[in-house]
Image (cartoon, rainbow, N blue to C red; front, side, top):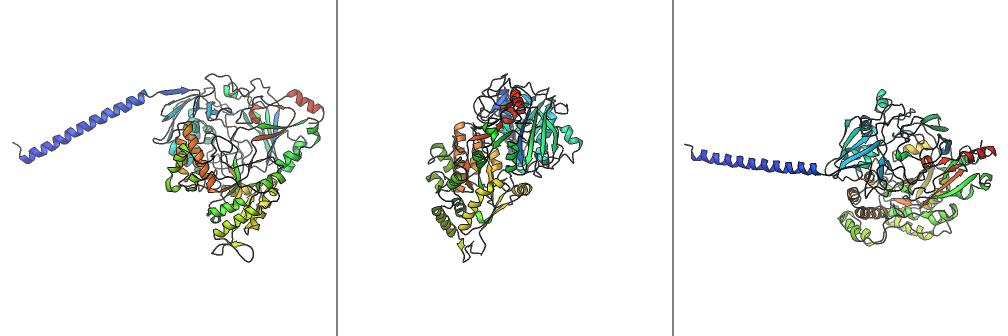
Length: 635
C-alpha cells in the first residue's frame, strides 16, 4: 500500500499527465484547423497581378490598347546622352553605366502603361498565390531564351534574386532580405518565393516579379570579374530584344535587335521594339548636343531645358517641317525634384535654417526671366494627383496623423500643408522674403559678423556649397547662390565633372544639389529606401537622408494598405509630413513631354498616360525617312 505522500505524488502526476494530454489534444485540434484553413484557402491563378482592383486586360489578350500592333519594323532610333560612361554594369555604385545598359534584362512580369500598379506575364506565363499572399509561384515560358540561346530557367531566377542580395545595393538587399527570406526552384520552369510572416504583403509579388533575370551560367563562368558590385565593359547576357552591338567609350553606344529574340510573339510585346538599332551619341554638354541634333547627327531629342525649348529650335529644318516640335501629355507623377539639403550636414539641423534657405529662392523671377514662363511651381511630393495633401487634414488622414502622437509636429494637424513661398518676379532677390529668412537665421543663432558673414556661438561660419555637373543650371543656381550670400551665408557654387559629381552624390558628400525623389501613384516598399530610417545613412535613393518616427509608421501603413482609400489617406499624411520638414527647396514641374524629332518618327494615336514610350512604342516611317535623305536634309 502506497504512503500518503506517494499517493499525493501519484495524484499530482496523474493531474499533470491529464493536463498534458488535454494540451496536446487542443494543440492537435488547432493545428488541424489551421491546416484545413490553409488547405481551404483559395489559390489564385492568373496571367497578371494588380495591387488594387482587377486587371484591365483579360487572359489571352492580344496586345495592349496603346500600341500599334501593325507598326512597321526597321530603321534606327538615335538620341543623345550627356557626360561619360565607363561600364556596362548598371547595378554597381562604381563608375557610370552606359545608357540603356539595364534594358537587356527582362523580368517575370511587365507593367502596363495605362493602368497603375498592374503587371502582366513576360518571362512568366502565369503566377499563382494564396489569397493571403504568403508565397507566389511563377511558371516560366518554356520558350524564353537568353541572347546566347540558352534557356531561361527557374535556377536563373533564384540566382538573380540571390546575387542582388549578396552583391547589390545595401539599401535594396537589407530591405528585401527581411521581406523575402527564401526563393526556391520547384522545377525547371517553376520558381517559388516565400514572404516573411507578419509583414504587409502588398507589392511583394510585384517586387519579385520585377527583378531582372540574369544568366547564372554567364556569371559563374568568371565569378570574380563578373560581380554585380564591380564596373565592367562586358555587358552580360540577358533575354531582352536588344543586345550591345558596338561602342566607342564616351562617344557612342549602339544596340541592335536580336534576330533570334524569343519574345516577339508574347502579347505584352506586340507592337513594341520596332527599331532595328538604337544609337546613343554622347556629348560633353547640352549646347554641343543641340548642334548635333540640328545637323542630324542624331534624330530625336527629349528636351528638358526651357531656354532651349523656347529659343533653340529656330532653324531651317523646323521651319520647313523636316523637324517636328511636339508637346505630348504626361499623366504620371512629376518627379519631386528641387534643391536638396543634406541633412547629415550640421548647418541644416535647425529647421529655421532650412526654411531660410528655401526663402532665398525666387521661383517666379527664375521662371519668368530665365525659363520663359514655361514651368509651374511644385509644392507636393505627389503634385497634381489625388495623393497630394490639400487643406486641413480630415477624416482618416487626420486619424492617421493623430496616431503618430508626440512624434508629429502639432502644426501639421492645425495648419494647411506647407506650400512653396511666393516671390516677386520683378527682381531675383525678393527683399521681403530675404528679411524673413535673415530673421530666422538670427533666431537660429547664426549672427552676422562685422565682415557680413554669419557665424554661430562657436564661431563656425554658416557655409553652403552648391554642387552640380550641369552647365545649363549655371544661370538658375548662381542667382540663388547670390541671394544666399546676400543673407550672410558663405555660399559657393561648385560645378564639377560628371564622374566626380556621381561619386560625391553616391557618398552623400555635398551640402546642396539638384536632386529628387521619383514618386508613384501606387507607392509601396520603395518608400523604405527613399525615406526609411534604417537605410537613411546610405541609401542612394534618399539624397537628403530624411527619416524619422513620424515617417516610418506612415510607410508601414502604406505598405500594409489593402484598400485604395487607406493608401490614399496615408500617402497624403506622408506628403504633409515630408513638406513640413523643409529639406528641399521645391522648384518646378512641367506636366508634359517636350520632344523634337526629325519627321520620320511616328507613334500611336492613343499614347498611354504613364509612359512616352519612345524606345518601345514609336517606329520609323520608311517613306518619310527616304524623303528626308533624298532632299539632303539627312545623310
